[in-house]
Length: 362
Image 1 (tube, helix red, strand yellow):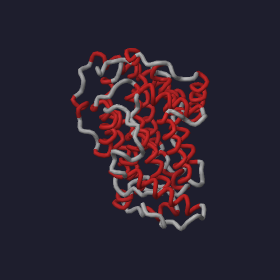
Image 2: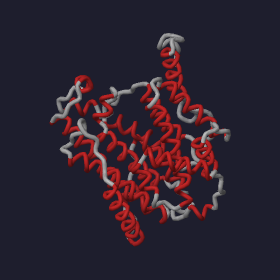
Image 3: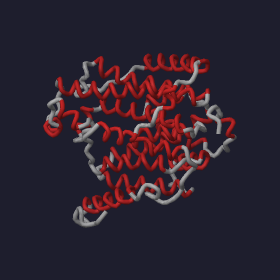
Image 4: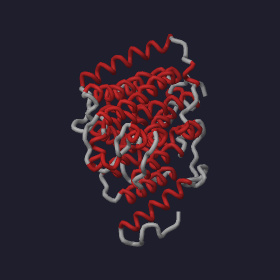
């Protein structure tokens, strides 16, 4: 398939219920202002399935965040994804629209599986020691969405997918830096623990009493620097996307990077305040995205397009380049997902008092 193929060239059937799409649109309008703003620049044939995708992701995120029994919430998401890939989605707007998106775009199952795997890591209270660990988490909860968006645009080129994954990881690193205080209040820590230790910051002491410090500022600055590197690298992939989709992706890149800039402007205080961008700023970035998309029409493609994928996102790139895999959970990934979900089931049963934690082998 040509990198320049447009969604219209794909002649995809109309499978989306208008009522389901309207529900998805409202979910995004209230749940993700940044994506809602960027999505306005996408062509309709990309925006509609993108709304279905993000609504399901938003539903999944909220289901885990708002649920006290997180293992049960993740296991329920696993079942919902299973039903969607069988073509028999749960009778809910987001599920029906997501199933239609899978069918219309031949979505590789590994990509949404990775997203739910990231939620499973949260439910298992996984710790992230190194920058690579944090990037691996970001690959699942964010880069997987970037890879799915690329597939929605009709692009399965490995280089374009790799740059989309760079953008997803950069966005998640930005979110992590913005939400340090909120996450700590919930007992969650996504900053690399080894990096904290290098700066003299004890992770457990920080969680017990999250406060601003020079050490925390340095860790935040280092993580935002990694995000900026990946934002810059991701731009090479925009020229490999259909022309009509480029403004929306440039907009997402600038809006999320702008959140990192606001963290820096607040002297890296991510404990006492949550950085946000204004409506005026978003409008400015939307205009910039349109201008930059025009520039990509005349500029030669950057050699950065062909940079090797991050090791943590390579499995997403490989999966995105293939047709949909509708096999059972864990097949093709050495059963690692099956083991993870077995552990989740054991934890869920233990939380409900059905059996001791660890009594079931994984």
